[in-house]
Length: 397
Image (cartoon, rainbow, N blue to C red; front, side):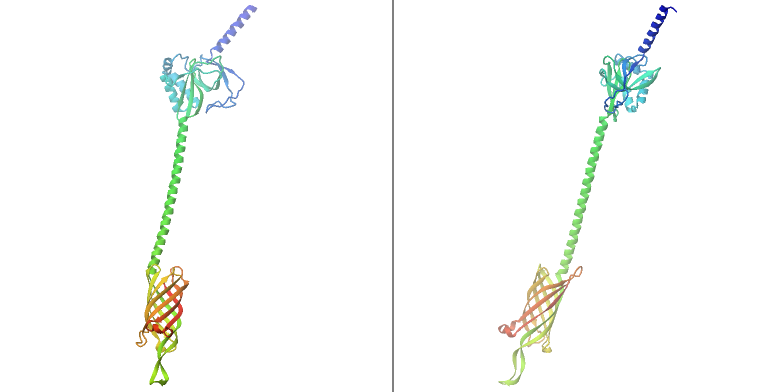
């Protein structure tokens, strides 16, 4: 072969190779691995391998070269074109709701959605859709490395979970995802649910606090009712009690005594006689006002000096009590009413102090009591007409 023929053959081969390269839909120059900052939820993770695209258009175009939205609408009306776009979205893992919105926007050429914004040199795409022999596929992690920005439509789709930022190059229709991030709708929904949960928790706590307050008030009311019931029961019991006294003392009274020797013809004379006494007295104890009680009673004064001088008596006391700790009082009565010659009205003075009190249902009391009496018919001779004793008073309550 002649040298001139060989040179011609080499030139033809070079032109053929160059034509094959230029016919590619997207010419990709493999660049060295470059870490790229991550944005939102895109696939642009740090450390990923990015391919640098320098040319658009050709036989691998997903749709075709698109001059305007009317042409875009025509191309998207073709079932095969729509199927390739849907396949790309499916391979990329775009949600069905978002994919339907993308196809709707592209098919309608919606100018309110499609923004005419060039894609700048150095910007990246999470993926780009292409086709080979009618079969759609995607290339991930693409950086635009051409000489200038390429014309494109950019639009956003929000499926309620993810906000997608799509790019549609006019030179080829190779639908691409610039980036994605969490949907503001989802964030707002999460915030709404968090707020609802917070309010529900506050309401739950408020309800628990309300129930606790109601329970506390109910318990207070129950305790108050029990206390009032106890007070009323004690009040009813306190209205009438019964008591019995056991006392020991003496009396001095003018009594007729026989004379050993008659005086002026008289065989008897009055003389002050002292006699030891054992007294027993009982009766009801009635409340008439707070701190004031009356106690009508009957009793017997057993005379140890002369049993025939034993006296039956009846009297009525009025006493001032000091919180059941003790009392002072007075009263009037009739002494020795079974003996007509010595029956006499008496004036009673007394006082007492608590020695013991029962507990629980038994609130009976034991008091030390001291009593003194003056015989009102002999007030001109008190030194020969008085009585006193002391002992115990048991009150049944």
